[in-house]
Length: 201
Image (cartoon, rainbow, N blue to C red; front, side, top):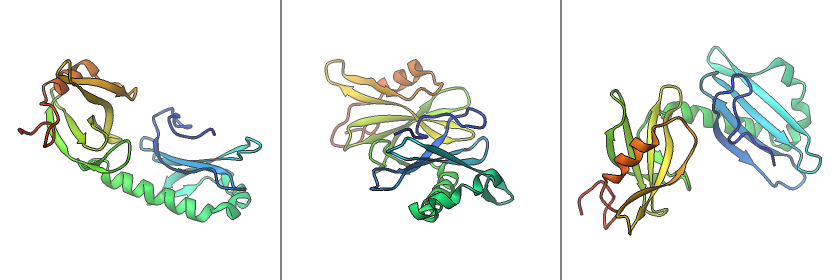
């Protein structure tokens, strides 16, 4: 299916914060929803898995609330029977949670959502730091940078290379970051052991 995950904001091309989706529902369309912090706008993309027909809905801020665009309101009728109200509530709750938590250092694993501990915070740029989190279940070290609009964002992950005895880059997400410097910081951390990396064993 086509989704909003990894797609740019339809309004200004910024990265979208992907917040959820429902798929493979018998006789119902697939749907994904996302939020653009820079535009303060939300989006839902509905797609009929049989015909491929897509419908995009846009919410914009008016006062304290995100309001569905007037031009999109006439299209709602077609989706009321497909859990429209539940999905809209999920989207708005997700946006509220994102806005409330984006600057918190409490993070969930990018792979499975489980809470992961902060194990090191090291210098990055003159006015910023890079935070490293360790997931014991995924055996991955995740690097986070602060963005003024998106908050703490995962920019790369690392795995422990026993032969090189250091962390090596496993995945990057394409955001603009000095990955060489981040990898240098990761390489300074001790190996995973009985306790988290970044702590003495």
